[in-house]
Image (cartoon, rainbow, N blue to C red; front, side, top):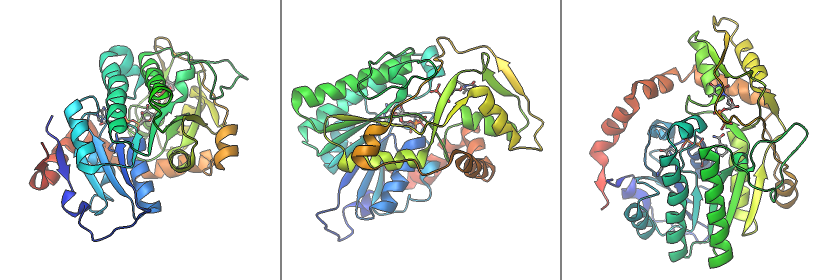
Length: 362
Ligand code: NAD
Ligand code: TYD
């Protein structure tokens, strides 16, 4: 894959030199959480320099970053975490202090249809990054993991960081495998690492294949809201900005080798959440439609968050209903964003906007 680079011209050439400034390699920064995290970092740490390293799969969208693409402290590099040459090049070129690793195949339904790419990106890609992080002796590697690695649990239960890993679908298994590789990097090679395991995120720029954006978009266009099975499965929800705050605290203050769960206790049965979302669109002609269940559908996830609260002083700040209201307003005013994705126009956007500024880095 060609390693397209944009923004490089200004990146090392802004005349600033500040010892507290860090170079952060963010993988998967063109996706949902990664793009929110890059905006968060640039705002909170104006001295930091951010490399967004992303393959631009169907889920990667540079439209997610239009508000910061001119920032001289931001650079985009197109590359595959599972490709040795791509990763070697980006480490050699930018010599990052930190890696925050979001890049992944992230959708459970797709993993059931085609597990192979999940193993390649989520497992081999993570090991590839770890190899180069070790070689370059970086200061911290943060693995963005998920509550799904603990597997399905019953009502009243909650997983802590040392609970056994018990994944039930190819996506969750690939993420659990990656978590073990992170553990090995620390135990065997002494690499400075953390793992963050969060519950389901929602918020701006989430790809319309996950539950909340599917329900919002379908309500807007008067389509049915597809609820899997009997709709009684339960998920715990966090606003993406609260998760970004947690990841930032773990990156800077997390004890090396430690895992931190991130959750809110905001649990919803899927059907109740679909009903609640539909109510936010009184004009909508949509209805809830129960559809064939997901194979191996996990009933419930829930994480204990005492550790991050006690050690790092984190707590969620965004009330769920307010967060949803804000998210709906964002989708309403960004219908073109979804429509471009649906029509594949955003790839065209990428070409048109960047082709003239593209530099082959290898
Ligand atoms: P996303 O699917 O929106 O984005 C993934 C990004 O990774 C995309 O930009 C894609 O182009 C990029 N990517 C995929 N394969 C790549 C590869 N081989 N090389 C380089 N880039 C590649 O995902 P998301 O929802 O933002 O999730 C980000 C991370 O957070 C994932 O690791 C996921 O497992 C984890 N996570 C997500 C949630 C959630 O609710 N979305 C919850 C917990 C954990
Ligand atoms: P999803 O957003 O895919 O996240 P995950 O499976 O990683 O938790 O799904 C959240 C829940 O919503 C899950 O129980 C499956 C269910 N679901 C539906 O009922 N309908 C849908 O259209 C989607 C995408 C998910």
